[in-house]
Every structure is written in C-alpha cells, then in structure tokens.
Length: 74
Image 1 (cartoon, rainbow, N blue to C red):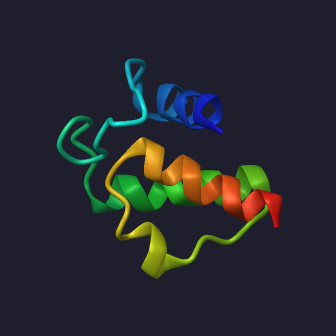
Image 2: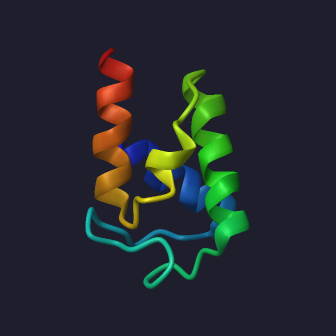
C-alpha cells in the first residue's frame, strides 16, 4: 500500500521522499484540494470508496496506509 501511495504522489505531485510518518500538510504542503484529489486517485485505483469522516482525520502517510489496508482486506 505504501508503495502505491508513494507512486501516486510521485506521478501527480513530484514527491519522492516520504515515509510512514510523513505529514500530508506539514511535510508535503498538500492543501485540502490536493488531499481530496489524492483520495479520488486512491479510490479510482482500488475501486473503493473512502469514508470522508475517517480520511479527513488522517494526517500521515502511515495512517492512510493502515486505513486502506483494512478496507482492502474486507
């Protein structure tokens, strides 16, 4: 999952250096529109729908990966 998110960030934002503790806003400078776009790209790639209330609370790559891993296993 981490590698997929890293690939999406690289392809769409030119961001390469991330780890699980990377903060979307503080470290990457992504704004609300960028985060929404990232969510749309993830939903499209996996043909899933993310819960808006849950993903809006996430601040790091690791939190997003954990959440996606639970969704995809279900």
